[in-house]
Amino acid sequence: VVIGRSMSIDDLFDDGFEAVYIGSGAGLPRFMGIPGESLKEVYSANEYLTRVNLMKAYQPGSTTPIYHARKVAVVGGGNVAVDVAVTAKRLGVPKVTMICLESREQMPAGREEIERVLEEGIEIKNGWGPMEILKESVSSEEDRITGVRFKACVSTLDGEGRFAPVYDEARQMEEKADVVFMAVGQRSDLSFLDSVCRVETDRGRIKASEDHSTSQEGIFAAGDVTTGPATVVRALAGGREAAVMMNRHMEGAPLSVET
Image 1 (tube, one colour):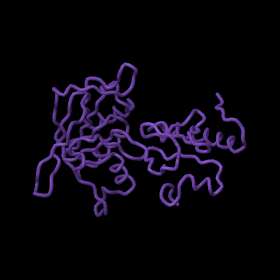
Image 2 (cartoon, helix red, strand yellow):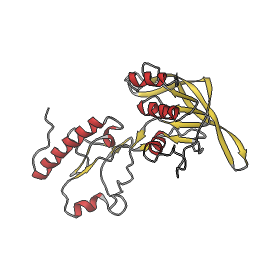
Image 3 (cartoon, helix red, strand yellow):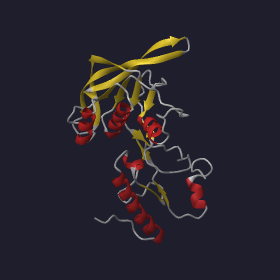
Image 4 (cartoon, one colour):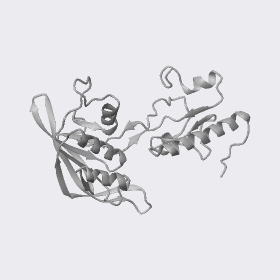
């Protein structure tokens, strides 16, 4: 049974279920929507790490081999970007560079993670946002990556602390690369919420109250699908709290979050 395909959420209620919990996470990669991003040498961090760690794509004879690059550009400054950069370096890529919007002090990656990157001989370039993936034609039907063009990022947050990068497009640089990894975050797949479902969403996330209830009675949600990408501990805590609320809902008791 696949919710959103062979069965809808409303079908679950029709079958007698009294409460439904949604904790589908944020497993889809984000891309920037810049020119050249569809080239085959552009990978999401999710795909690369999955193929290397779970599918052993680096081994000779792999059915899904990875491209053995000479110069890699990793776009992003978080812990996932660090994982991608270190993995590529340890798999033998001679030159790996991380490029991110944030200053060194503002990078989302942990301090120890950043130190590990530098110890591995990976360069970090701060204060740059990607403009386009550069390419060259190798045949009438094929292009290949030659690098990435970046524009200077003046600031990443607005006066209220929200993510709102400001650029100086007069200042640009190019980073040579034959493979680019996009590690700029993840998003939720809400395609299973069909037109009948009345759960409200906001910016690609399910809107849930403090008690984890949603706009549709009987449906609860927690974790990354409501908060955006966060920690496993936070998601586990949300799931546990939501289970308590669902139990109260089925008993007809008022929903309240204990402090």
